[in-house]
Image (cartoon, rainbow, N blue to C red):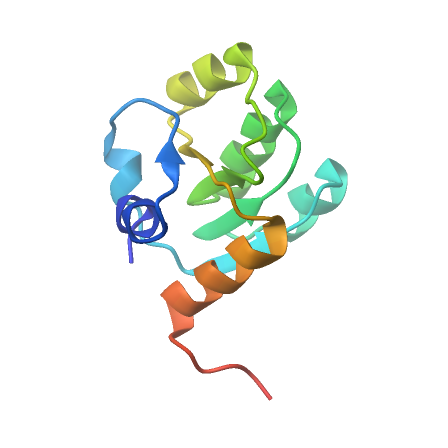
Length: 117
């Protein structure tokens, strides 16, 4: 599933401009609000969920190769962050769901309804 398909399936708003990055495949899921920890743990292709909306989120997503960043609970995303995300080609999504709900949906998008034992 691509970032664009994921956003459409769950009704998440794509905050950034139209770009080819919306067609990136999603291959994993990570949820973390500690940016230094996320920088070490987010894998390329991950849907990364965080409540942070500052410029550093774009830097971490770009460095790790995250497929996209999803900001939960309709938290307002700072305009400089959106501008930087557009420049760095990092898709930002806004979701009404909480981080745990987003993580479950992203996991299901990647793996189906099968949960690990």
